[in-house]
Length: 140
Image (cartoon, rainbow, N blue to C red; front, top):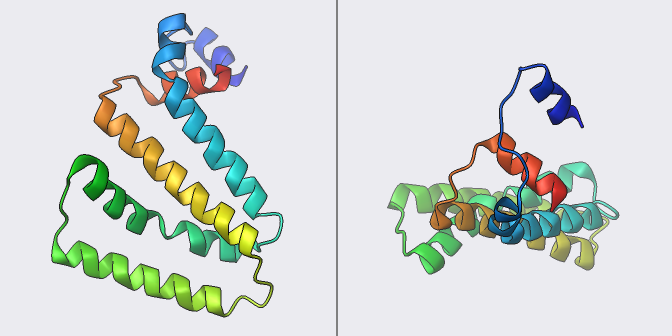
């Protein structure tokens, strides 16, 4: 409703929802929904600080999945940076006094679904504005 109100006022511009947009955004919308659902499930038993540390695994997942899905190779410096983030995440996880395995699994699942979402958008060549994609995802 907010986007439509802003569009009616001429503040923003985006495409109307259509069957073709729905089909094109079906898989990204599903991945986005998984990301949100897994994130909320993880937050049931994790502190926001620990959850944010888990979400810092996104660069690692992106590098690994980009290599598998797209065949993209990163530099040694990128690998070293991602390794430093990963080690910090593990150290924080080891210090979590309220460790809850299912919540960690949901947090990691959220990271993977977010990476798959971004890689799919990049690989599929979907060329819509951010607002059109937000609007389309809100319907799907």
